[in-house]
Image 1 (tube, rainbow, N blue to C red):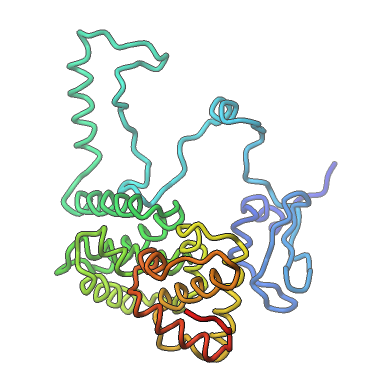
Image 2: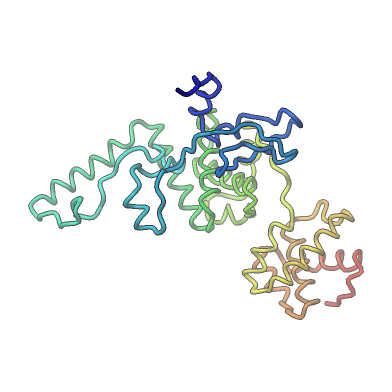
Length: 322
């Protein structure tokens, strides 16, 4: 007969590894860098290597799938929660295709009934003006994100920021489009997917001035701490759009890091510095692009590139001529 489980062991069985990772600090060194070893069912400190806890229950599925078809057949739950939908994806939906559960066509005599059901289903998913405004705002956020080609993680982060703004009653007196654009800009900064205010304003149907003002208001009221954008963050995107090689990207990042050490980037726009560094790197490595091409991709003027170019070449002694 096995030993009786202690209260601590029972609590372990109730909580998953990911939950423990969020709640616990290392008792030895106080580090929050805790890592879950799912093969050994242990929580390990990434700083000192101490095994903090063990014998945890794996909260994942008990089955394995080797392709998309197997995953669809074996899964027994619905889609995961998402904050990009007003009801977090918890409600059901009647599909627009006129087919039943077996894939057979619905008879023509029943299609009018299905049309009415579908219409009422859309209506009952939204209850009240607050939820209607949230649904409109999140659809606007999804549209802006698609136009900018942003990943899912940024959309989720922006949705969370917007929902916090609604909870704190910060929307009143401001346009929904402006708050959505500001939330999206803050999410881009937080997720290290840099987009400029000009790019956000261009697709959001509000002015750059309003986006900037709303962004500063949200960060102040919601206490969002974001580090300043680094020119290095813009290099991969600009280089890809210009068709430059990885060597040019590495050289441009090296130039920017040297400039940051000497304080040459202080008070300068990050896009202008990134564009000038890419231009210098392309000249040095024989993949020269015109200043006009670089300026169009970076969204700055040729004069800005020339000014940053002169500062970098003179202070860093690059030995490059225009």
